[in-house]
Length: 472
Image 1 (cartoon, rainbow, N blue to C red):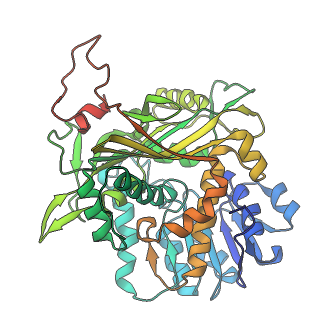
Image 2 (cartoon, one colour):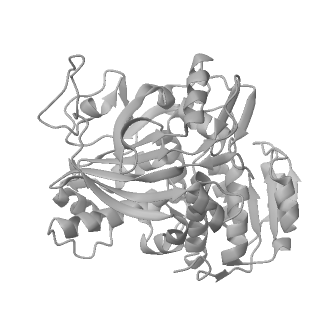
């Protein structure tokens, strides 16, 4: 399928909230694949970034910060029945925007669940309240107030989002390669039972970004290949992971949630200060940051098998992220500033000279040990495929596009998480933009070459326990 074969006509208006690197990257994709006129698109954003790009496309650009006190007054005139609210913002409440879109009869999509400004870094709030687990419960609670409502797609970027569809395809691939009859799973229960039968113990969202630029990071500057504010806010949240039934050793600084399904735990430390061991085909084994993400929680919840009220199977799921080297340096400097953001921010784009973003899912514990399935997209190919994108942003923007199209084709599904969607349609839309999509098996485990320099407290009976994966 070529980049131009997917085309959906849409008669409503499209309202962007936020227009950073992801908004700027997704706009040309929307105009390429969704039949609408530029005079039916509006952008509401807190910063001037992207104004030039918006003007080049002839799109209305409104610079204003949305707050709890003004968001209704600003957005209500722009939204009506059959319109689309695309939330790509930071520090604007997703729950508030979902409720507004529902009231106005509009479709909705975001790439993460955001609170109002300050919640993630409010040191007076309990750690649990600042978690993605808590934010997700607040968003899903909106389901109780309505049955059939306009579709609101939660957390549908690359990750969370695209990776949930990659997990399903990876499960089918492993089933084929291990001679397990997968059947035709369609429900949550059927997918969870398949993962259980295959023996999947852990699911890593394993990502290594090797993009480099000809402009080095400077002191007191945070450099990234996508939203600086987005990365810093999630990096300052507590580390979180879905907690599997095979785990024997609970982390000393771990905490459990008092409400919900209890599918995930949190650590009493920032995700950007916690490293975990993982593997991707090109990079090999490496240490990634245990950054909290919604998919770490929703995947664990979705792939839970119960017997009555007893949980009999659940995989451990988490994100393991090694961003670009400039971003790693920025994180180290940020931590040294006690998690107070540097004075200058820069998103690498035109200055990137080489590198790939290797993003996929690592499913481990089965008969063939571990299997990685995902995208290996280079900066060179990303520039050929779409304007205003790096390899990192294109993996996100094509996924946001696919979620928008899915919502337009399924307009009355209420609140939907990526795991609950039919995985085939989003993958079909994204594939032409993902570069090389590969599946690789590996014999690597987190115990590889461990204990050679110093003795470690390991559990050699099961290499895929979090005790072995985690780097303190």
